[in-house]
Image 1: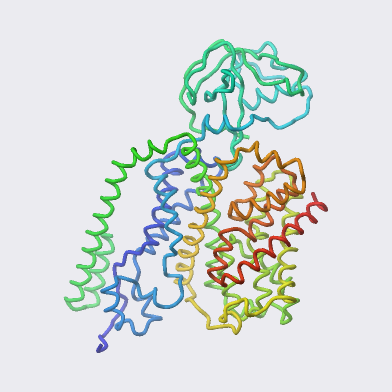
Image 2: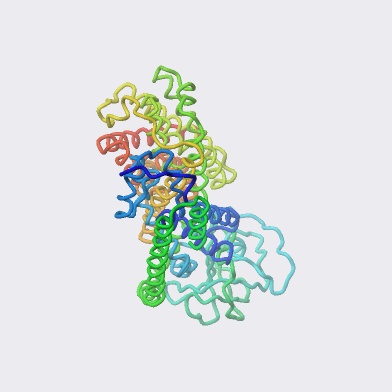
Length: 266
Length: 348
Protein backbone atom coordinates (compact mmCIF):
# COMPACT_ATOMS: atom_id res chain seq x y z
CA UNK A 1 0.00 0.00 0.00
CA UNK A 2 3.03 2.30 -0.10
CA UNK A 3 2.48 5.22 -2.45
CA UNK A 4 4.27 4.77 -5.73
CA UNK A 5 5.80 7.77 -7.43
CA UNK A 6 3.61 8.93 -10.28
CA UNK A 7 4.76 11.13 -13.08
CA UNK A 8 2.92 12.59 -16.03
CA UNK A 9 -0.02 11.18 -17.93
CA UNK A 10 -0.25 7.47 -18.47
CA UNK A 11 -2.17 5.87 -21.25
CA UNK A 12 -3.68 2.59 -20.44
CA UNK A 13 -5.54 0.36 -22.80
CA UNK A 14 -8.97 -0.32 -21.48
CA UNK A 15 -11.59 -1.62 -23.85
CA UNK A 16 -14.85 0.01 -22.97
CA UNK A 17 -18.10 -1.45 -24.24
CA UNK A 18 -19.56 1.98 -24.96
CA UNK A 19 -16.71 2.69 -27.38
CA UNK A 20 -17.38 -0.54 -29.25
CA UNK A 21 -21.12 0.19 -29.35
CA UNK A 22 -20.65 3.73 -30.65
CA UNK A 23 -18.25 2.58 -33.37
CA UNK A 24 -20.69 -0.15 -34.37
CA UNK A 25 -23.53 2.37 -34.74
CA UNK A 26 -21.34 4.82 -36.63
CA UNK A 27 -20.08 2.12 -38.98
CA UNK A 28 -23.63 0.99 -39.69
CA UNK A 29 -24.68 4.54 -40.61
CA UNK A 30 -21.65 5.06 -42.86
CA UNK A 31 -22.21 1.71 -44.55
CA UNK A 32 -25.75 2.57 -45.62
CA UNK A 33 -25.33 6.29 -46.28
CA UNK A 34 -21.72 6.84 -47.42
CA UNK A 35 -20.54 3.58 -48.99
CA UNK A 36 -23.84 2.61 -50.60
CA UNK A 37 -27.31 3.92 -51.30
CA UNK A 38 -28.99 1.42 -49.03
CA UNK A 39 -30.29 4.25 -46.84
CA UNK A 40 -32.92 4.92 -49.50
CA UNK A 41 -34.66 1.73 -48.39
CA UNK A 42 -35.29 3.26 -44.97
CA UNK A 43 -35.37 7.05 -45.11
CA UNK A 44 -35.83 9.87 -47.56
CA UNK A 45 -33.00 11.22 -49.68
CA UNK A 46 -32.58 14.49 -47.79
CA UNK A 47 -31.38 12.78 -44.63
CA UNK A 48 -28.16 11.51 -46.23
CA UNK A 49 -25.77 14.31 -45.08
CA UNK A 50 -27.08 14.06 -41.52
CA UNK A 51 -26.57 10.31 -41.52
CA UNK A 52 -22.99 10.67 -42.77
CA UNK A 53 -22.12 13.37 -40.23
CA UNK A 54 -23.73 11.36 -37.40
CA UNK A 55 -21.87 8.22 -38.45
CA UNK A 56 -18.51 10.00 -38.49
CA UNK A 57 -19.21 11.70 -35.16
CA UNK A 58 -20.22 8.42 -33.51
CA UNK A 59 -17.02 6.73 -34.70
CA UNK A 60 -14.89 9.63 -33.43
CA UNK A 61 -16.69 9.53 -30.09
CA UNK A 62 -16.32 5.78 -29.94
CA UNK A 63 -12.56 5.97 -30.57
CA UNK A 64 -12.27 8.53 -27.77
CA UNK A 65 -14.23 6.27 -25.47
CA UNK A 66 -12.25 3.17 -26.40
CA UNK A 67 -9.04 4.44 -24.88
CA UNK A 68 -9.48 5.63 -21.34
CA UNK A 69 -6.70 7.78 -20.03
CA UNK A 70 -6.07 6.93 -16.42
CA UNK A 71 -4.52 10.39 -16.13
CA UNK A 72 -8.02 11.83 -16.28
CA UNK A 73 -9.24 9.59 -13.54
CA UNK A 74 -6.36 10.44 -11.24
CA UNK A 75 -7.71 13.97 -11.02
CA UNK A 76 -10.74 12.95 -9.07
CA UNK A 77 -9.64 9.65 -7.69
CA UNK A 78 -6.92 10.25 -5.13
CA UNK A 79 -6.56 6.68 -3.93
CA UNK A 80 -6.22 5.08 -7.29
CA UNK A 81 -3.30 2.98 -6.05
CA UNK A 82 -5.57 1.19 -3.63
CA UNK A 83 -7.89 0.37 -6.44
CA UNK A 84 -5.26 -0.87 -8.81
CA UNK A 85 -5.54 -4.26 -7.19
CA UNK A 86 -9.30 -4.27 -7.61
CA UNK A 87 -8.97 -3.25 -11.19
CA UNK A 88 -6.56 -6.04 -11.94
CA UNK A 89 -8.91 -8.68 -10.68
CA UNK A 90 -12.17 -7.18 -11.87
CA UNK A 91 -10.99 -5.57 -15.05
CA UNK A 92 -13.29 -2.65 -14.42
CA UNK A 93 -12.68 1.06 -14.64
CA UNK A 94 -12.27 3.30 -11.65
CA UNK A 95 -15.01 5.42 -13.18
CA UNK A 96 -17.56 2.88 -12.07
CA UNK A 97 -16.83 3.55 -8.45
CA UNK A 98 -17.45 7.27 -8.30
CA UNK A 99 -21.18 6.89 -7.77
CA UNK A 100 -22.08 8.87 -10.88
CA UNK A 101 -23.20 6.69 -13.71
CA UNK A 102 -21.93 8.71 -16.65
CA UNK A 103 -18.92 6.51 -17.23
CA UNK A 104 -20.88 3.32 -16.99
CA UNK A 105 -22.44 1.70 -19.97
CA UNK A 106 -26.23 1.76 -19.64
CA UNK A 107 -27.51 -1.76 -20.09
CA UNK A 108 -30.33 -0.76 -22.39
CA UNK A 109 -27.73 0.49 -24.88
CA UNK A 110 -27.02 -3.09 -25.92
CA UNK A 111 -30.27 -2.98 -27.85
CA UNK A 112 -28.48 -0.75 -30.35
CA UNK A 113 -26.50 -3.76 -31.53
CA UNK A 114 -29.65 -5.23 -33.14
CA UNK A 115 -30.23 -2.56 -35.81
CA UNK A 116 -26.48 -1.89 -36.17
CA UNK A 117 -25.59 -5.53 -36.86
CA UNK A 118 -28.63 -5.94 -39.08
CA UNK A 119 -27.52 -3.00 -41.22
CA UNK A 120 -23.89 -4.18 -41.32
CA UNK A 121 -24.51 -7.86 -42.05
CA UNK A 122 -27.96 -8.28 -43.59
CA UNK A 123 -29.54 -4.95 -44.52
CA UNK A 124 -33.31 -5.46 -44.47
CA UNK A 125 -34.94 -5.21 -47.91
CA UNK A 126 -37.07 -2.32 -49.10
CA UNK A 127 -40.77 -2.67 -48.39
CA UNK A 128 -42.56 -4.40 -51.25
CA UNK A 129 -45.74 -6.16 -52.24
CA UNK A 130 -46.47 -7.37 -48.69
CA UNK A 131 -46.93 -3.79 -47.49
CA UNK A 132 -48.60 -2.63 -50.69
CA UNK A 133 -51.22 -5.40 -50.53
CA UNK A 134 -52.16 -4.58 -46.94
CA UNK A 135 -52.70 -0.93 -47.64
CA UNK A 136 -55.64 0.59 -49.34
CA UNK A 137 -54.29 2.39 -52.40
CA UNK A 138 -55.12 6.04 -52.01
CA UNK A 139 -54.19 9.17 -53.81
CA UNK A 140 -54.95 12.35 -51.96
CA UNK A 141 -58.46 13.60 -52.59
CA UNK A 142 -57.76 16.48 -54.90
CA UNK A 143 -61.27 17.21 -56.02
CA UNK A 144 -62.28 16.95 -59.65
CA UNK A 145 -61.12 19.43 -62.24
CA UNK A 146 -59.29 19.77 -65.51
CA UNK A 147 -55.64 18.86 -65.23
CA UNK A 148 -52.96 20.58 -67.30
CA UNK A 149 -51.96 18.98 -70.60
CA UNK A 150 -49.49 16.08 -70.32
CA UNK A 151 -46.05 16.64 -71.87
CA UNK A 152 -45.23 15.13 -75.25
CA UNK A 153 -43.78 11.62 -75.48
CA UNK A 154 -44.75 8.27 -76.95
CA UNK A 155 -44.71 6.27 -74.82
CA UNK A 156 -44.83 8.79 -72.01
CA UNK A 157 -43.15 7.85 -68.71
CA UNK A 158 -45.44 8.65 -65.78
CA UNK A 159 -45.16 8.02 -62.05
CA UNK A 160 -47.92 5.94 -60.52
CA UNK A 161 -48.99 8.95 -58.46
CA UNK A 162 -49.53 11.14 -61.54
CA UNK A 163 -51.35 8.38 -63.44
CA UNK A 164 -53.60 7.48 -60.50
CA UNK A 165 -54.57 11.06 -59.65
CA UNK A 166 -55.42 11.84 -63.28
CA UNK A 167 -57.38 8.61 -63.65
CA UNK A 168 -59.41 9.34 -60.52
CA UNK A 169 -59.92 13.09 -60.62
CA UNK A 170 -59.38 14.52 -64.14
CA UNK A 171 -62.67 15.55 -65.79
CA UNK A 172 -60.67 16.66 -68.87
CA UNK A 173 -59.60 13.04 -69.50
CA UNK A 174 -56.03 14.10 -70.30
CA UNK A 175 -54.89 10.46 -70.31
CA UNK A 176 -57.22 9.60 -73.20
CA UNK A 177 -55.45 8.34 -76.31
CA UNK A 178 -51.97 8.49 -74.77
CA UNK A 179 -49.60 5.54 -74.58
CA UNK A 180 -47.95 5.61 -71.15
CA UNK A 181 -45.19 3.64 -69.46
CA UNK A 182 -45.32 2.86 -65.72
CA UNK A 183 -42.65 1.29 -63.52
CA UNK A 184 -43.25 -0.55 -60.26
CA UNK A 185 -43.37 -3.95 -58.62
CA UNK A 186 -46.03 -6.61 -59.10
CA UNK A 187 -48.72 -7.11 -56.44
CA UNK A 188 -51.63 -9.54 -56.51
CA UNK A 189 -55.10 -8.24 -55.82
CA UNK A 190 -58.12 -10.19 -54.67
CA UNK A 191 -59.90 -12.16 -57.37
CA UNK A 192 -56.99 -12.83 -59.70
CA UNK A 193 -56.33 -9.27 -60.79
CA UNK A 194 -52.87 -7.80 -60.48
CA UNK A 195 -51.41 -4.35 -60.16
CA UNK A 196 -48.17 -2.56 -60.61
CA UNK A 197 -47.41 -0.75 -57.34
CA UNK A 198 -45.02 1.70 -55.70
CA UNK A 199 -44.82 2.85 -52.09
CA UNK A 200 -44.69 6.54 -51.31
CA UNK A 201 -42.50 7.50 -48.37
CA UNK A 202 -42.71 10.92 -46.71
CA UNK A 203 -40.05 10.59 -44.06
CA UNK A 204 -39.11 7.00 -43.28
CA UNK A 205 -40.40 3.58 -44.27
CA UNK A 206 -42.77 3.57 -41.28
CA UNK A 207 -45.08 5.99 -43.07
CA UNK A 208 -45.18 4.21 -46.45
CA UNK A 209 -48.42 4.59 -48.41
CA UNK A 210 -49.34 2.44 -51.39
CA UNK A 211 -49.97 3.53 -54.98
CA UNK A 212 -51.43 0.92 -57.33
CA UNK A 213 -52.51 0.74 -60.95
CA UNK A 214 -54.46 -2.33 -62.05
CA UNK A 215 -53.10 -3.99 -65.19
CA UNK A 216 -55.37 -5.74 -67.71
CA UNK A 217 -54.61 -7.69 -70.85
CA UNK A 218 -51.34 -9.33 -69.79
CA UNK A 219 -50.52 -12.22 -67.44
CA UNK A 220 -49.08 -11.40 -64.04
CA UNK A 221 -45.36 -11.98 -63.39
CA UNK A 222 -44.34 -13.24 -59.92
CA UNK A 223 -45.10 -10.91 -57.02
CA UNK A 224 -42.39 -8.36 -56.22
CA UNK A 225 -40.94 -8.53 -59.74
CA UNK A 226 -40.05 -5.06 -60.99
CA UNK A 227 -41.71 -4.39 -64.33
CA UNK A 228 -42.20 -1.65 -66.89
CA UNK A 229 -45.72 -1.72 -68.29
CA UNK A 230 -46.65 0.06 -71.51
CA UNK A 231 -50.30 0.58 -72.39
CA UNK A 232 -53.27 2.88 -72.54
CA UNK A 233 -55.63 4.20 -69.88
CA UNK A 234 -58.80 2.19 -69.32
CA UNK A 235 -61.60 4.50 -68.08
CA UNK A 236 -63.76 2.85 -65.42
CA UNK A 237 -66.21 5.52 -64.36
CA UNK A 238 -67.00 9.18 -63.86
CA UNK A 239 -64.04 11.07 -62.31
CA UNK A 240 -64.48 11.81 -58.61
CA UNK A 241 -66.69 8.75 -57.96
CA UNK A 242 -65.62 5.48 -56.38
CA UNK A 243 -65.94 3.80 -59.76
CA UNK A 244 -63.04 5.80 -61.17
CA UNK A 245 -60.01 3.63 -60.48
CA UNK A 246 -56.60 3.65 -62.14
CA UNK A 247 -56.56 0.83 -64.71
CA UNK A 248 -54.20 0.29 -67.65
CA UNK A 249 -54.77 -1.86 -70.75
CA UNK A 250 -51.30 -3.30 -71.20
CA UNK A 251 -49.61 -3.76 -74.54
CA UNK A 252 -46.34 -5.05 -73.15
CA UNK A 253 -44.91 -6.01 -69.76
CA UNK A 254 -41.11 -6.00 -69.47
CA UNK A 255 -39.04 -7.06 -66.51
CA UNK A 256 -36.65 -4.46 -65.19
CA UNK A 257 -34.28 -3.99 -62.28
CA UNK A 258 -35.33 -2.29 -59.06
CA UNK A 259 -34.41 1.41 -59.06
CA UNK A 260 -31.90 2.75 -56.51
CA UNK A 261 -34.68 4.65 -54.78
CA UNK A 262 -37.43 2.05 -54.40
CA UNK A 263 -40.01 4.56 -53.19
CA UNK A 264 -41.90 7.20 -55.10
CA UNK A 265 -41.26 10.79 -54.09
CA UNK A 266 -44.09 12.91 -52.92
CA UNK B 1 -5.93 -1.17 -30.87
CA UNK B 2 -2.44 -1.20 -32.34
CA UNK B 3 -2.09 2.55 -31.91
CA UNK B 4 -3.18 2.14 -28.33
CA UNK B 5 -0.38 -0.35 -27.70
CA UNK B 6 2.17 1.91 -29.39
CA UNK B 7 0.95 4.91 -27.44
CA UNK B 8 1.10 2.99 -24.20
CA UNK B 9 4.64 1.87 -24.90
CA UNK B 10 5.66 5.36 -25.92
CA UNK B 11 4.29 7.00 -22.84
CA UNK B 12 5.94 4.38 -20.67
CA UNK B 13 9.31 5.01 -22.19
CA UNK B 14 8.91 8.78 -22.07
CA UNK B 15 8.12 8.73 -18.44
CA UNK B 16 10.94 6.34 -17.71
CA UNK B 17 8.70 3.95 -15.91
CA UNK B 18 10.07 0.68 -14.70
CA UNK B 19 10.10 -2.41 -16.80
CA UNK B 20 7.48 -4.18 -14.77
CA UNK B 21 4.93 -1.52 -15.54
CA UNK B 22 5.71 -1.67 -19.25
CA UNK B 23 5.44 -5.44 -19.22
CA UNK B 24 2.12 -5.18 -17.49
CA UNK B 25 0.77 -2.81 -20.11
CA UNK B 26 2.00 -5.03 -22.93
CA UNK B 27 0.54 -8.12 -21.31
CA UNK B 28 -2.77 -6.38 -20.82
CA UNK B 29 -2.79 -5.19 -24.41
CA UNK B 30 -2.00 -8.68 -25.65
CA UNK B 31 -4.75 -10.22 -23.60
CA UNK B 32 -7.20 -7.64 -24.90
CA UNK B 33 -6.09 -8.22 -28.49
CA UNK B 34 -6.31 -12.00 -28.23
CA UNK B 35 -9.62 -12.10 -26.37
CA UNK B 36 -11.13 -9.38 -28.55
CA UNK B 37 -9.86 -10.98 -31.74
CA UNK B 38 -11.17 -14.42 -30.83
CA UNK B 39 -14.53 -12.99 -29.86
CA UNK B 40 -14.72 -11.02 -33.10
CA UNK B 41 -13.77 -14.06 -35.18
CA UNK B 42 -16.35 -16.17 -33.40
CA UNK B 43 -19.07 -13.59 -33.98
CA UNK B 44 -18.20 -13.22 -37.65
CA UNK B 45 -18.01 -16.99 -38.20
CA UNK B 46 -21.26 -17.74 -36.44
CA UNK B 47 -22.87 -14.78 -38.14
CA UNK B 48 -21.82 -15.73 -41.64
CA UNK B 49 -22.60 -19.43 -41.25
CA UNK B 50 -25.75 -19.37 -39.16
CA UNK B 51 -26.94 -15.92 -40.25
CA UNK B 52 -28.32 -16.86 -43.66
CA UNK B 53 -30.11 -19.88 -42.20
CA UNK B 54 -31.73 -17.85 -39.44
CA UNK B 55 -32.58 -15.12 -41.91
CA UNK B 56 -34.17 -17.62 -44.30
CA UNK B 57 -36.31 -18.92 -41.48
CA UNK B 58 -37.40 -15.44 -40.56
CA UNK B 59 -37.78 -14.27 -44.11
CA UNK B 60 -41.53 -14.33 -44.20
CA UNK B 61 -42.71 -11.11 -45.82
CA UNK B 62 -44.14 -9.87 -42.52
CA UNK B 63 -40.85 -10.42 -40.70
CA UNK B 64 -38.88 -8.72 -43.45
CA UNK B 65 -41.24 -5.76 -43.33
CA UNK B 66 -40.87 -5.63 -39.54
CA UNK B 67 -37.07 -5.44 -39.82
CA UNK B 68 -37.29 -2.75 -42.48
CA UNK B 69 -39.64 -0.55 -40.47
CA UNK B 70 -37.64 -1.20 -37.30
CA UNK B 71 -34.32 -0.15 -38.85
CA UNK B 72 -35.99 2.74 -40.68
CA UNK B 73 -37.31 4.28 -37.45
CA UNK B 74 -33.95 3.78 -35.75
CA UNK B 75 -31.88 5.17 -38.64
CA UNK B 76 -34.17 8.15 -38.93
CA UNK B 77 -34.05 8.89 -35.20
CA UNK B 78 -30.30 8.64 -34.62
CA UNK B 79 -29.17 11.95 -36.20
CA UNK B 80 -31.83 13.83 -34.22
CA UNK B 81 -30.93 11.97 -31.06
CA UNK B 82 -27.24 12.72 -31.49
CA UNK B 83 -27.90 16.42 -32.04
CA UNK B 84 -30.06 16.51 -28.91
CA UNK B 85 -27.53 14.77 -26.72
CA UNK B 86 -24.61 16.88 -28.01
CA UNK B 87 -26.34 20.08 -26.96
CA UNK B 88 -27.62 18.74 -23.66
CA UNK B 89 -24.18 17.36 -22.80
CA UNK B 90 -22.63 20.73 -23.66
CA UNK B 91 -25.09 22.56 -21.41
CA UNK B 92 -24.56 20.02 -18.65
CA UNK B 93 -20.78 20.36 -18.87
CA UNK B 94 -20.21 24.04 -19.62
CA UNK B 95 -23.13 25.96 -18.09
CA UNK B 96 -22.44 26.62 -14.39
CA UNK B 97 -25.13 25.66 -11.91
CA UNK B 98 -25.49 29.14 -10.46
CA UNK B 99 -26.79 30.40 -13.80
CA UNK B 100 -29.96 28.35 -13.39
CA UNK B 101 -30.47 29.50 -9.82
CA UNK B 102 -29.93 33.17 -10.63
CA UNK B 103 -32.34 33.13 -13.56
CA UNK B 104 -35.26 31.48 -11.73
CA UNK B 105 -37.49 33.47 -9.36
CA UNK B 106 -37.44 32.43 -5.67
CA UNK B 107 -41.21 31.84 -5.52
CA UNK B 108 -41.94 28.36 -6.99
CA UNK B 109 -45.28 29.49 -8.45
CA UNK B 110 -43.43 32.14 -10.46
CA UNK B 111 -40.49 29.88 -11.25
CA UNK B 112 -42.77 27.30 -12.92
CA UNK B 113 -43.68 29.31 -16.05
CA UNK B 114 -40.11 30.60 -16.37
CA UNK B 115 -38.73 27.05 -16.19
CA UNK B 116 -41.40 25.84 -18.59
CA UNK B 117 -40.47 28.49 -21.12
CA UNK B 118 -36.78 27.75 -20.51
CA UNK B 119 -37.46 24.26 -21.83
CA UNK B 120 -37.29 25.84 -25.28
CA UNK B 121 -33.51 26.23 -25.00
CA UNK B 122 -32.72 22.56 -24.41
CA UNK B 123 -32.93 20.87 -27.77
CA UNK B 124 -32.97 17.33 -26.43
CA UNK B 125 -35.47 14.55 -26.62
CA UNK B 126 -37.37 13.38 -23.57
CA UNK B 127 -34.65 10.90 -22.65
CA UNK B 128 -32.17 13.76 -22.24
CA UNK B 129 -34.51 15.94 -20.20
CA UNK B 130 -34.94 13.45 -17.36
CA UNK B 131 -31.27 13.58 -16.25
CA UNK B 132 -31.23 17.36 -16.71
CA UNK B 133 -34.31 17.81 -14.53
CA UNK B 134 -32.74 15.51 -11.97
CA UNK B 135 -29.56 17.57 -11.85
CA UNK B 136 -31.60 20.78 -11.59
CA UNK B 137 -33.30 19.38 -8.48
CA UNK B 138 -29.93 18.35 -7.09
CA UNK B 139 -28.71 21.89 -7.65
CA UNK B 140 -31.48 23.33 -5.50
CA UNK B 141 -34.06 24.29 -8.13
CA UNK B 142 -37.61 23.91 -6.79
CA UNK B 143 -39.03 20.49 -7.82
CA UNK B 144 -42.11 22.11 -9.37
CA UNK B 145 -39.94 24.23 -11.68
CA UNK B 146 -37.69 21.32 -12.56
CA UNK B 147 -40.74 19.21 -13.40
CA UNK B 148 -42.22 21.93 -15.63
CA UNK B 149 -38.88 22.00 -17.40
CA UNK B 150 -38.84 18.21 -17.66
CA UNK B 151 -42.20 18.25 -19.44
CA UNK B 152 -41.72 21.26 -21.69
CA UNK B 153 -38.11 20.75 -22.83
CA UNK B 154 -38.71 17.75 -25.10
CA UNK B 155 -41.91 19.21 -26.52
CA UNK B 156 -41.23 22.86 -27.36
CA UNK B 157 -37.55 23.07 -28.22
CA UNK B 158 -36.52 24.40 -31.66
CA UNK B 159 -35.40 21.02 -33.05
CA UNK B 160 -38.78 19.48 -32.32
CA UNK B 161 -40.69 22.49 -33.65
CA UNK B 162 -38.64 22.51 -36.87
CA UNK B 163 -39.23 18.77 -37.26
CA UNK B 164 -42.95 19.40 -36.77
CA UNK B 165 -43.03 22.10 -39.44
CA UNK B 166 -41.21 19.75 -41.84
CA UNK B 167 -43.66 16.95 -41.09
CA UNK B 168 -46.67 19.21 -41.63
CA UNK B 169 -45.64 21.34 -44.61
CA UNK B 170 -47.91 24.31 -45.20
CA UNK B 171 -49.61 23.91 -41.84
CA UNK B 172 -47.98 26.37 -39.39
CA UNK B 173 -51.05 26.24 -37.11
CA UNK B 174 -49.99 22.72 -36.10
CA UNK B 175 -46.60 23.99 -34.90
CA UNK B 176 -48.24 26.80 -32.94
CA UNK B 177 -50.83 24.49 -31.42
CA UNK B 178 -48.12 22.05 -30.35
CA UNK B 179 -46.11 24.84 -28.72
CA UNK B 180 -49.08 26.35 -26.88
CA UNK B 181 -50.68 23.17 -25.59
CA UNK B 182 -47.37 21.56 -24.56
CA UNK B 183 -46.34 24.67 -22.63
CA UNK B 184 -49.79 24.90 -21.03
CA UNK B 185 -49.57 21.27 -19.90
CA UNK B 186 -46.08 21.73 -18.45
CA UNK B 187 -47.01 24.88 -16.52
CA UNK B 188 -50.26 23.35 -15.28
CA UNK B 189 -48.37 20.32 -14.00
CA UNK B 190 -45.83 22.56 -12.25
CA UNK B 191 -48.59 24.50 -10.49
CA UNK B 192 -50.40 21.30 -9.56
CA UNK B 193 -47.13 20.15 -7.94
CA UNK B 194 -46.82 23.45 -6.01
CA UNK B 195 -50.38 23.06 -4.73
CA UNK B 196 -50.71 19.30 -4.21
CA UNK B 197 -47.23 17.81 -4.54
CA UNK B 198 -45.69 16.05 -1.55
CA UNK B 199 -41.96 16.04 -0.95
CA UNK B 200 -41.97 12.44 0.25
CA UNK B 201 -42.91 11.28 -3.26
CA UNK B 202 -39.39 12.25 -4.29
CA UNK B 203 -36.20 10.54 -3.11
CA UNK B 204 -34.49 12.29 -0.18
CA UNK B 205 -31.52 13.53 -2.17
CA UNK B 206 -33.64 15.84 -4.30
CA UNK B 207 -35.16 17.68 -1.31
CA UNK B 208 -32.12 19.27 0.28
CA UNK B 209 -29.99 19.90 -2.79
CA UNK B 210 -27.24 17.30 -2.51
CA UNK B 211 -23.65 17.62 -3.61
CA UNK B 212 -23.00 18.55 -7.20
CA UNK B 213 -22.09 15.52 -9.19
CA UNK B 214 -20.11 14.71 -12.27
CA UNK B 215 -17.08 16.43 -13.70
CA UNK B 216 -17.45 19.47 -15.92
CA UNK B 217 -15.42 20.58 -18.90
CA UNK B 218 -14.43 18.43 -21.85
CA UNK B 219 -14.32 15.21 -19.92
CA UNK B 220 -17.81 15.77 -18.54
CA UNK B 221 -18.99 16.66 -22.02
CA UNK B 222 -17.52 13.51 -23.53
CA UNK B 223 -18.79 11.23 -20.77
CA UNK B 224 -22.22 12.86 -20.73
CA UNK B 225 -22.51 12.61 -24.49
CA UNK B 226 -21.50 8.95 -24.62
CA UNK B 227 -23.78 8.01 -21.78
CA UNK B 228 -26.80 10.03 -22.88
CA UNK B 229 -26.57 8.89 -26.48
CA UNK B 230 -26.25 5.22 -25.60
CA UNK B 231 -28.96 5.41 -22.95
CA UNK B 232 -31.40 7.25 -25.20
CA UNK B 233 -30.35 5.14 -28.19
CA UNK B 234 -31.30 1.97 -26.35
CA UNK B 235 -34.74 3.39 -25.62
CA UNK B 236 -35.02 4.57 -29.21
CA UNK B 237 -34.44 0.99 -30.37
CA UNK B 238 -37.10 -0.18 -27.94
CA UNK B 239 -39.52 2.40 -29.31
CA UNK B 240 -38.67 1.46 -32.89
CA UNK B 241 -39.39 -2.19 -32.14
CA UNK B 242 -42.76 -1.27 -30.62
CA UNK B 243 -43.58 1.01 -33.52
CA UNK B 244 -42.62 -1.64 -36.10
CA UNK B 245 -44.67 -4.30 -34.32
CA UNK B 246 -47.65 -2.00 -34.26
CA UNK B 247 -47.07 -1.07 -37.90
CA UNK B 248 -47.07 -4.71 -39.01
CA UNK B 249 -49.80 -6.05 -36.72
CA UNK B 250 -52.36 -3.32 -37.27
CA UNK B 251 -53.12 -2.34 -40.85
CA UNK B 252 -53.99 1.27 -41.44
CA UNK B 253 -57.54 0.33 -42.38
CA UNK B 254 -58.22 -0.71 -38.76
CA UNK B 255 -57.10 2.71 -37.54
CA UNK B 256 -59.59 4.22 -39.97
CA UNK B 257 -62.43 2.59 -38.01
CA UNK B 258 -61.71 4.94 -35.13
CA UNK B 259 -61.55 8.05 -37.23
CA UNK B 260 -65.33 8.25 -37.29
CA UNK B 261 -65.67 9.40 -33.69
CA UNK B 262 -63.62 12.50 -32.86
CA UNK B 263 -63.55 11.75 -29.10
CA UNK B 264 -62.53 8.14 -29.50
CA UNK B 265 -59.83 9.06 -31.99
CA UNK B 266 -58.29 11.62 -29.60
CA UNK B 267 -58.18 9.05 -26.79
CA UNK B 268 -56.88 6.34 -29.13
CA UNK B 269 -53.98 8.44 -30.36
CA UNK B 270 -53.21 9.61 -26.81
CA UNK B 271 -52.91 5.96 -25.78
CA UNK B 272 -50.93 5.20 -28.93
CA UNK B 273 -48.42 7.91 -28.02
CA UNK B 274 -47.80 6.20 -24.67
CA UNK B 275 -47.36 2.77 -26.23
CA UNK B 276 -45.36 3.68 -29.31
CA UNK B 277 -42.67 5.67 -27.43
CA UNK B 278 -41.60 7.60 -30.50
CA UNK B 279 -38.85 10.12 -29.71
CA UNK B 280 -40.18 13.67 -29.56
CA UNK B 281 -37.91 14.69 -32.41
CA UNK B 282 -39.48 12.13 -34.73
CA UNK B 283 -43.05 11.83 -33.49
CA UNK B 284 -44.34 14.60 -35.76
CA UNK B 285 -43.53 12.41 -38.76
CA UNK B 286 -45.46 9.51 -37.28
CA UNK B 287 -48.36 11.82 -36.52
CA UNK B 288 -48.26 13.12 -40.09
CA UNK B 289 -48.53 9.57 -41.41
CA UNK B 290 -51.73 8.92 -39.43
CA UNK B 291 -53.64 10.55 -42.23
CA UNK B 292 -57.11 9.36 -41.28
CA UNK B 293 -57.25 11.20 -37.97
CA UNK B 294 -58.49 14.67 -37.11
CA UNK B 295 -55.85 17.39 -36.52
CA UNK B 296 -56.82 17.52 -32.84
CA UNK B 297 -56.19 13.80 -32.40
CA UNK B 298 -52.78 14.14 -34.06
CA UNK B 299 -52.04 17.12 -31.82
CA UNK B 300 -52.87 14.99 -28.77
CA UNK B 301 -50.43 12.38 -30.08
CA UNK B 302 -47.66 14.98 -30.26
CA UNK B 303 -48.45 16.60 -26.90
CA UNK B 304 -48.76 13.36 -24.93
CA UNK B 305 -45.84 11.56 -26.62
CA UNK B 306 -42.95 13.68 -25.31
CA UNK B 307 -44.45 13.84 -21.79
CA UNK B 308 -45.81 10.36 -21.11
CA UNK B 309 -44.68 7.15 -22.72
CA UNK B 310 -43.47 3.75 -21.61
CA UNK B 311 -39.77 4.56 -21.89
CA UNK B 312 -40.21 7.85 -20.01
CA UNK B 313 -42.11 6.11 -17.22
CA UNK B 314 -39.25 3.62 -17.00
CA UNK B 315 -36.67 6.43 -16.98
CA UNK B 316 -38.54 8.41 -14.33
CA UNK B 317 -39.04 5.34 -12.17
CA UNK B 318 -35.30 4.74 -12.38
CA UNK B 319 -34.44 8.34 -11.51
CA UNK B 320 -37.18 9.52 -9.13
CA UNK B 321 -38.71 6.29 -7.89
CA UNK B 322 -41.75 4.29 -8.91
CA UNK B 323 -44.22 6.01 -6.58
CA UNK B 324 -43.44 9.33 -8.23
CA UNK B 325 -43.39 8.06 -11.81
CA UNK B 326 -46.83 6.41 -11.67
CA UNK B 327 -48.60 9.38 -10.03
CA UNK B 328 -46.86 11.98 -12.15
CA UNK B 329 -47.34 10.21 -15.50
CA UNK B 330 -51.02 9.44 -15.05
CA UNK B 331 -51.90 13.01 -14.05
CA UNK B 332 -49.76 14.39 -16.87
CA UNK B 333 -51.60 12.20 -19.40
CA UNK B 334 -54.99 13.59 -18.35
CA UNK B 335 -53.77 17.19 -18.34
CA UNK B 336 -52.10 16.78 -21.74
CA UNK B 337 -55.23 15.33 -23.35
CA UNK B 338 -57.43 18.12 -21.94
CA UNK B 339 -54.97 20.77 -23.03
CA UNK B 340 -54.64 19.46 -26.57
CA UNK B 341 -58.42 19.17 -26.98
CA UNK B 342 -58.87 22.79 -25.83
CA UNK B 343 -56.01 24.16 -27.94
CA UNK B 344 -56.94 21.98 -30.90
CA UNK B 345 -60.50 23.28 -30.81
CA UNK B 346 -59.19 26.82 -30.68
CA UNK B 347 -56.35 26.77 -33.23
CA UNK B 348 -56.97 23.87 -35.61
